Length: 420
Ligand code: UD1
Image 1: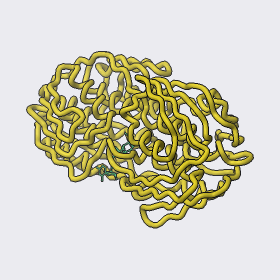
Image 2 (image 1 turned 60 degrees about the vertical axis):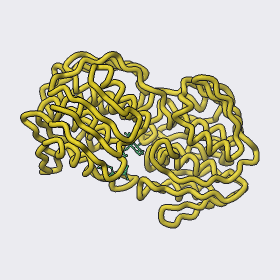
Image 3 (image 1 turned 30 degrees about the vertical axis):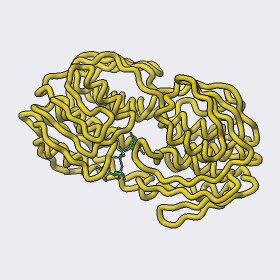
Image 4 (image 1 turned 180 degrees about the vertical axis):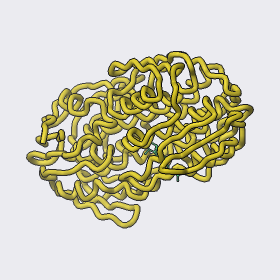
């Protein structure tokens, strides 16, 4: 198994390119199922999760050509609608094939994704929405079996809770449904906007893109013909590198970023004393040697993203006062706390709130990655910790960060991938 060895204390400098967004590429790949023609995808991040979903499509009989950041997916040859446990258990987002498979073929079986390290993560809202659209759903033998032999019907779906994946599954299902679907309390993340725009550019009438109420006129099971899709920049990857600059008191430039998508992170880093120079899709951050403490609460877009909580906690360890971080989206997303404390931070947890107290220095140690974003927080802490930090179980990082050690090395960090 690989691990990352980081020798802390080096300042970063220079520029890197931000990759395409994993969380946008996944629903876009799932949405290709709505078509029986080849679809071209560009600016894919070169990460394991993308390979996993493309592999699932190949297993279902699709023709997939994939080379790092580009892929052509032809789901015209798809001859199975069963998303097997072996793949779904590797990546929860595989549940995104449920809506499009059901909408196009009128039936499918998708393994239940189960829990994950950051909490329970049920899919009840996905299933309720599909049932409201006329699907019959049965859970048996660890699989969700969904049927709608006459196709799905448009419906008014009111989500009890804002759900990114639930909104995506419903948008994809609605695109091929008979009649009009209105989604109330929809998620507004940039990834949902890209998915809606992809579907709209195939001629489907989609209203309310980027708002909490999306209306879609379905094609009545007529497959879509997509234009090529270029994946939007990864706002979480960009935010992570901003945090890398912040924690190391450095000046770093990020190319190919959408600053609007990371406004919440920019605002918090500005409040901590960092300054920004933003020009179109290029952002330069300059940190401060006296970072101020931060107070933040995770919430849905455009609020502060839960996927940046762990990285900000790492940065907060270097602030000159006590920071308060509240996690509102996932019940168990603080597993990085005990690992950060192994590096010498002083973080206290009470329920969903963490208090990060100032410490003079962090010290390198062996730490264990527990989930994707928690892992990146450990890498960030390793960049400033005195001595050597070894981050183990980095397969979590490989799921979602494109060439993390390469990009950090290009900025001057002392980081290398080694084998246990
Ligand atoms: C997506 C992102 C993930 C991010 C999360 C929140 C992808 C591939 N993943 O995950 O990186 O952290 O959004 O921004 O895009 N919930 C239910 N029932 C459901 C569905 C969700 O109770 O049927 C709850 C979840 O447990 C969670 C909250 O709703 O507490 C939000 O989850 P959701 O927005 O669905 O997250 P994901 O789409 O799984």
